[in-house]
Image (cartoon, rainbow, N blue to C red; front, side, top):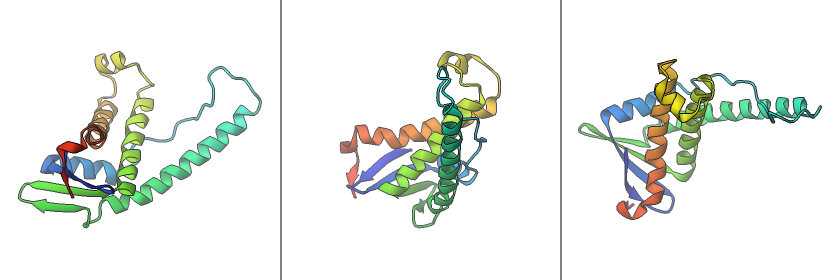
Length: 158
């Protein structure tokens, strides 16, 4: 996945067929992981923490539900173009932000499902390869979207 054209409010990415299929699969099946327990503080023992954690969990669940609805728009035909074996994805700033949030939710949710390991543990452990794979895929596409911010001069204007 690479940025090929950009304007102030629009980004066009080139993906090969395999990348496009994987990205669409991630978005279609979002969310992959269940919401885990929310913890405000690992050390704080305030009696209000329980109430705060409940409110945070409800807010996060509502946000995920909204992202799921917005994900449908990312699959729409007006965002994707086919050219031979290649696919072109054009996103406005709102859709790009939604896609980044979905990918981040997949990546962080998979990390939580793995037990929140350190980076070296992720690389060295063989446990739960499905969540490791999801985490890697989400990170790959996040980097594709975010790297374009580092070098917008490499893209053609839209």
